[in-house]
Amino acid sequence: MIEQKNEIQEFTIDQLPEEQDIQDIVFNLMVDPNLAPINYFNDFSEESLDFSEIAGGDNDETGLFCSTNGQLMAISTHALHHHLEIDPKQATEILVARAVRKMMCLGAVPEAVSSILYHINVADPNGQFIAAGAKKGLENACQKFDLKLTDRKIRFDSFSGHGPVSPTIIISLMASIPDKDKLVNHVFKKKGNNIFMIGKSYDDVNSSEYLEFYHEISESSLPVFDIEDEVKLHGVMKKLIQSGLLSSASPVGKGGLFFSLLRAGMHSGFGFDITSDAEIRKDAFLFGESMGRIIVGVDPEKADDFVDLMSGLKVPFFALGHVTKGEIRIDDESFGFIDKMTPSN
Image (cartoon, rainbow, N blue to C red; front, side):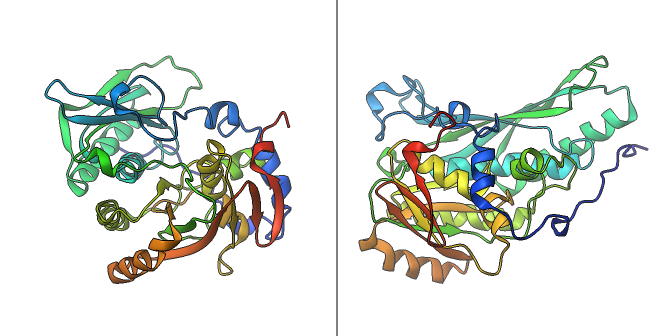
């Protein structure tokens, strides 16, 4: 019988003070190696995609290319080490869901996935626990998202002498792009565009950069995640992409809502003016990394149609605010201008 060997220290958000200096959090997180502009914001290409030079430059971490028969394709690679030793099934489901959500924001149709586990010892009971759980999570996620698995499902890098290196799962996701004219990227396009968040926010900062880097708390549970909600969200994005109502779209990812908005504005120099959800702690709203959320930009002329469509789909959505010329404002408090949001300025 395969048994879990490691247990995690229980953390609750109540351990953190609710009233905190948000600006101090922001400027401390700007030097987090996982969020700093030199790493996190250096992956942009031209504002509009040049399809004559596909794969000739960077376009986020998703690469575009044409197959030999002319089919436009996308591929991305994602990794996760959090909680593989605690809950490998759900950790793997989260990893696949993240990858699929990113492809759906682009306007691509996820097709197939391959994976590999690094730094595990399959001769050890805990290595077997990780491998078995990751396999279950991968198979369940592929079934939910209608993905094909490569023949070998999970390949292993079995290594007993890895020392302190955490077990890690890496997946590559392949997607097809049915209509290049409907591709959407994450970049804010125009001052005055409305910003909405699709999905629900929670008082959750588990496994976030905010919790681990700013508060130096490295042990917490996985972020809030419901695979059924993810499936619904991906269906919503498919309808929105087809409707042509979106000017931009990006998943809420590493660094939470604030850094996802920052990344959307960095390339174009636009800022954002948003209002937080009064029912959610501000630190969790801005920096929590709970799953199942997407930021979309909508032209004011299309906002009514967007709201009508979303209301009929019965999925939570929240009017965040609007794109600015460059200033960043949260709840009427100015955080300066986006072109100064680097450690060197």
